[in-house]
Length: 274
Image 1 (cartoon, one colour):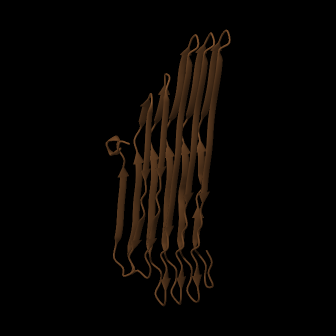
Image 2 (image 1 turned 120 degrees about the horizontal axis):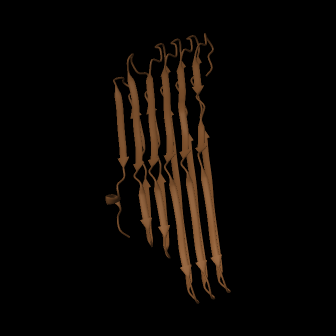
Image 3 (image 1 turned 30 degrees about the vertical axis):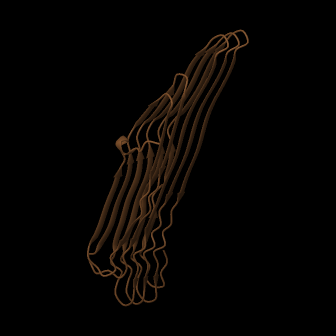
């Protein structure tokens, strides 16, 4: 946040948090004779965060802007994966749990002023990606020459991109008040097998932008975006594929108050059978 004049601007990226509270993975195998039991647990997690404040003032005015990316958070709850297999004779058991999570957050405040006016803009984002408890379990018993194959798969991609681009050019002050609150939320996920397969794939996007330039005093540009998935429980041979995407653009170039509120609240009734 730069200025060629008086600089009293405040730019803040409050401590970002990438949080994984707990991970527990267990494999229990009991075999006799020539029984073969193969078990596997995997958890691949990638959490990213890119935050930028670029609220500048050029030429004669002063820079008094307040630009903040407040409390950006990626949260993953406890992850517990368990495989339990018991075999005898020449039986064969194959069990696998797999969790793949990728969460991303980008902030960006770019509220500039150029000309003889001052930059008095207030721009902020509040972003969060949240996943509740994830539990996956497989239990199998095989005797003789029986063959049991079990698998659980949970894959998730959540993105949030929010931008405040509220600029002012010319002789007036930049008095924009731009805010974005966006969140993606997934409830508890539970998948269990007694001799079958579960697959759950979730994609949630986001993207919200305030582009409110040269606004008049008192103008408020705000976006409230929520992408919500409930808790899911899958037993046996089930597949569930979910995709939520939303793009929101807020433009108030001529002034006035612009408030956009969007909530995508997915329910199991929204599932279209394959």
